[in-house]
Image (cartoon, rainbow, N blue to C red; front, side):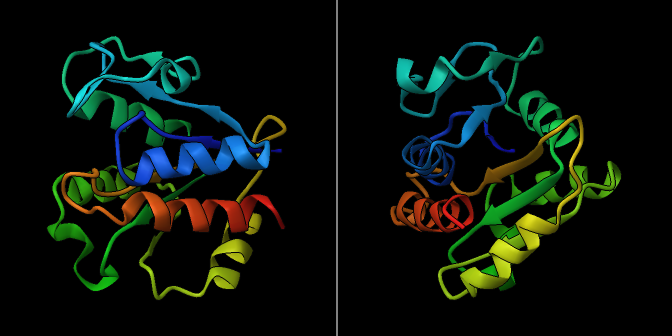
Length: 157
């Protein structure tokens, strides 16, 4: 069983969320303690799947979500410069520290390769937990659409 993990932020994470709902994929994750994204309170349709992290700030939910994950998928406009986007470098560092396998994808990434990678992730307690993250909507307007396409491809195969 596949579970998509995210923290509820706009952009890539919101696209992953919407694709998971459309494909019937389970959702989980930790959100910021205040239940907000950069635009205001998380929508109920998103927050109902998330648990507020016990620590304040944006990094504790990232660490908690990476720790839950079987794998991390980072979706960015250009995979060659992924760590130039706010928060992505920290997220990748946490994944390396916790030995969580990760992939960096952009709009040109072969979706068949991503599907194969996601399907190869280790199952733990009966599920594969894929954390999906990337730039917020205010930093990459197409991120939601690209993440939706990738997660839908993973979920529908």
